[in-house]
Length: 121
Ligand SMILES: [Zn+2]
Image 1 (cartoon, helix red, strand yellow):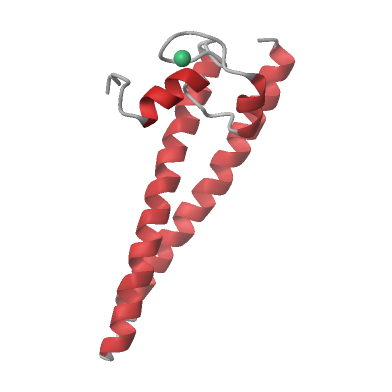
Image 2 (cartoon, rainbow, N blue to C red):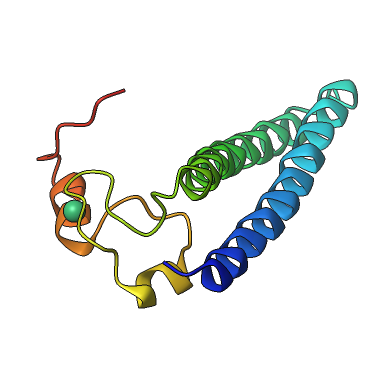
């Protein structure tokens, strides 16, 4: 992939990372505040823990994407960006434009979603 394109993807990844870090940070702050402000009212408590659950799943998802962004940035450094980490085929530019941190080509993504991909941890 040419340097100009790589730089565009890199900038997008860095932007995305910065905004995710902002979101994750805010959510964690909010979670802490909710702890402190825990009230005696059972109804309030219930809605509080519901909100916390929501925030938790949200930031888990954010963390997952953050990880993938970090990995994609490393792949840019290693000159391996834009190829599927499983089979080594090129990932369609359309896919990269939508989600620059994708790791798999369409084929392998399908396998992964079906649980058919052997992922090394
Ligand atoms: Zn693949």
